[in-house]
Image (tube, rainbow, N blue to C red; front, top):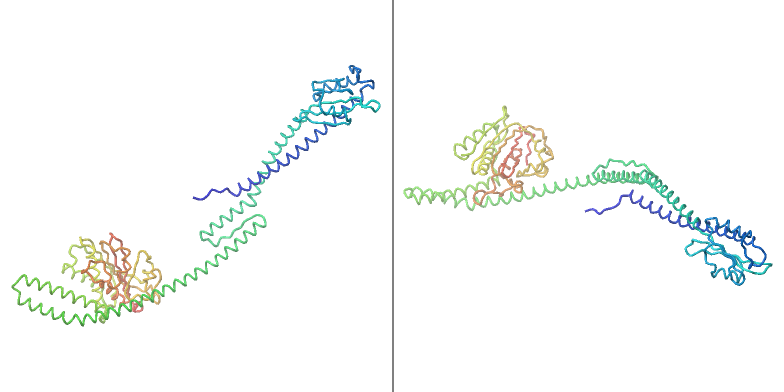
Amino acid sequence: MRPFKFSLTFAILASLASLLVLTWILLSLISFKTAEQDLFSSKNEEGRLLLASFLHLLPTRPLSTPLDLTPADRFVARLAAEKDFTGLAVIDRQGRVVYQRGGQNSFDARLLATLRQGGESSAFALNSRHLFRYAPLYDGGELVGAARLTLSLASEHEKLQRSRHIFLAYFLLDFLLLLGFGSYLLSRLIVVPVRKLLAATERITAGDYSYKAHVPGSREVAELAQSFNVMVEALRTKQHEVATYVNSLETANRELQAAREETLRSEKLASVGLLGAGMAHEIGTPLAAIIGYVDILRDELGTDPVKSDYLLRIGAEAERIDRIVRELLDYARPRQSQVEAVDVAALLAATCTMLEGQGVIKGINTSIAFEEGLAPVQVDSHQLQQVVINLIINARDAMPHGGSLLIRAGQGSLGELAAKSRVEQHRRGFGRRREDLSQLPHAPLKGVDSKIPCVRIELSDSGTGIAPENLARIFDPFFTTKEPGKGTGLGLAICSRIIDSFGGKITVESAVGKGSRFVILLPLSEMGRCRP
């Protein structure tokens, strides 16, 4: 499962939004503090002027005289009509309140300090809701009292609150505009080029090295796209070099494999030749004597059915041994071919008639089909018939409960082998050379015109078929899938050797449970033969 990751657009916009929010917080702190200080300073100056005006209107007579109905009192009355006015108090030299308007406490530490020390001052309440302005009273240069003016800061807080709301509204509007415009710019300048490069990367990954990335954007993005195209060109060059090198390695491996197989073939031929010659020398003479004595005893004991049966069995097994020895000799040192013009259709028909007469293909539905006007081939008729008989017998053994066998003959060419796929076709002719198709079923025959006409013989059965793991080895000597004692594994190897000596090819296609099809191609031209 791939881990979840945010997109580039979201990451950039989130970062931009965070920066904008942080900037707004910093600016708001600075702005609000500055505005608050300016408002409070202005209010403080207003309080100083108001208090100074009040003190200027006070009479010079002693403070113990009532101040009612004086100009100072009328000024305070008008001032009290303002909503910011909270209170005003005046104390004399002894700290007694001689004038008060408003409900504020008349005594506080700063007012008494002003009475003792003189000098103007100001202070804000802990909740910053009120401003206290203090000033001393002098009479002829003598400190005779102190006054305190209290003003409300509610209007200033309302102004600050309105400023905050306006600032927040402007911030939200600017935030949305900047975020939208930034998203558009990011999409045009970064996201779209990156996505185009990503799409180009996917095409390169799919193997399309001819694709060129044309990405608009800033200089860095254009340089990145140019570097990407240079990289793709380098990859295409390297791919071509690697493909050329791999092809050369594959060619070398095929040649090494062919040389190895040819060496194994030569060694196997030599071993089989020595084995066949030795067996013919060591077994042939005593085996002939055994067969002769069996014939003599059969004549003498013909009246005894039990012993005659024993002798018949001994003779059959001895003849089987003789047949195996002859097969080994035929495989190791095949007899000289007597090449003649052979009518393939007539030979196939005669072979089927002979086998039917002997009951070899009893219970099998055999059908033959030939094309009209087949040209004769230059082969040994006896050897070709041996190949056909061997293939028919193998087909019969693959259909123990009966089935159908189709034998066809027609025109063909060596080139059709190259069209077979590696899965569908497995070719194993004894005598595989570098010109064979055993390792390269897709490649044409080297040194041979694949368009040379051939006679095509096809034998198809509905038997049990051949397992895929055995299909590639059925033409190898001594390989058999039959039960012990029922086959030597030389039949198909001899067939392949014979067809190979004709300059032809033999192939097989098979599927388990569906049957097998053997195809023989015999060239009509001497130039088309693939001789060892």
